[in-house]
Image (cartoon, rainbow, N blue to C red; front, side, top):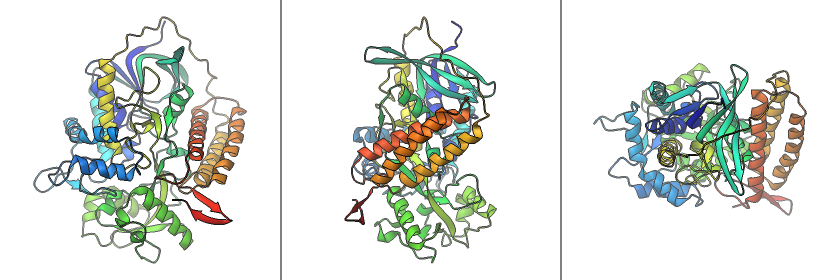
Length: 514
């Protein structure tokens, strides 16, 4: 038997995956597989910060209630309380990993405000918190003797042993993208930390690698999937039609005083919510979408002109520089914005230890569904979730380290990598993204969702009849599965709640469901 074996194999190198690896490596050997490079993750694009109760005027109960309200009553309250109580120690742990958070004048950690929060509790590194965390954890992982990092490796299928109703994961099949060869890797436990699936939508703040690979692998292996109808749309992505990527304008800018406005410069969010531009994201995103339709405008605007001199340049340098690169000076001009798919609130169902319904398979971070987000994620709870449940999964996995010994295994045979049909697959992916954006985006209808399901059957058929295997083909296959899971969940969920907003028709008149 010549397949390499590790105690733990982690797919994904964002905050959740690296937290697990660093914690578990004190007791075991860990392989971290990166689809791209170590630093290319959703985490690296997170601008805002991490929510944690660190001031005397704040409390765990307030953080819990803010999370439950944002989640529209569908959060797992036990999981929320579990996460909130561990937030302060998570910040301490990140500081131990050399993450240098911004400080206030008295040298204490500076705390910002974001939508849905009743207190200032957002810990940040200017407007590039995720990137700073990614760099610190990545450096620590590379220096750890018990962690092996393998970039350019794509997970394809989980290795599953089935005995009666019990499924056990004992490894993973991967593609070495650079070498163009397949590998079978055995493990006492496999950890999915592959992030979300924003690329299923035509407009997303997610990087190109966010194609739902871990979610699709888990679904194919028979793991339970939950809450896929709740996809969060961020209300303020930079409107730049010429750009190949979608740049996020952090909610922290609104927390600092920027206001959402119409093309006329008129503020409008008070019509929708008492918190105005700092209302929960699902409410703000729908309001922006609705006003764009009313105004027949391709975008709305963020007005940061009233912020004190120097604040944007000093606290939001990434946003300031990106705006300046397209000819916009946010200190004297309005910033054009549009909503974009941002965060997958559902995912692979887990318990508080990151365990899935498949023995030996853990899921942490955005790919997982612990229930802490419910129908809509509270701002800056995502990086927190990655640390809290990454640490908890590592503690559980090392304490319960499987004694499973595989005496024989069957490698899955795949086609030789072939990119000749990639152009056709890219076109198919674009069709899927357009369908999902139009029919399963910010506002949905039953008829539109059903139509999308019919089109999905056709796209699946077309993909199966394109010969050859490649990374592009695998990503399209995974996105199609994500789309199917999402559409099915949308159709099962009756009415509107949180990130799932259904528009229904009655007597040929359109009425917004509540």
